Image (cartoon, rainbow, N blue to C red; front, side, top):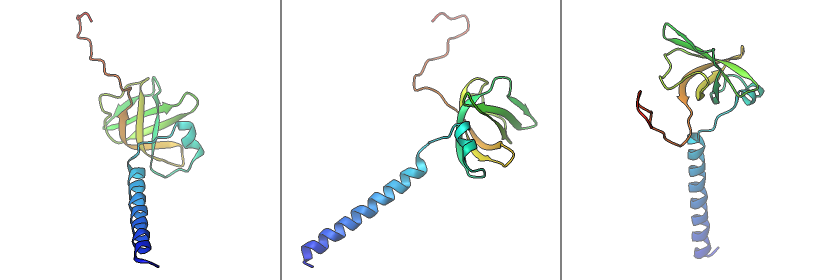
Length: 130
């Protein structure tokens, strides 16, 4: 093998290794989530993100624990978190929760986030016009 071919082969190996590192790093940072229907079709016990709408009438808190149901319009999953919800989470609002689904169909969340559109609208002041 000539020196030129050896350098080219080494360069290709280094580039392939760098590409693999970039892809592996991106896979851990992407923020995909599953719907309740998709989650029930999968395995329990694995850490996942679950996205859907907080079912109206299901939200309750007591003693630092919070319970509610999240739905994709077809399936509802009970969610439990051992903390108070952030003030941005409301019934009827889209949210994303992170945690694990147990064998009884209860999703044990450790992170809850409000999901919102990318359009900002400032709140209207009470009594204000516009």
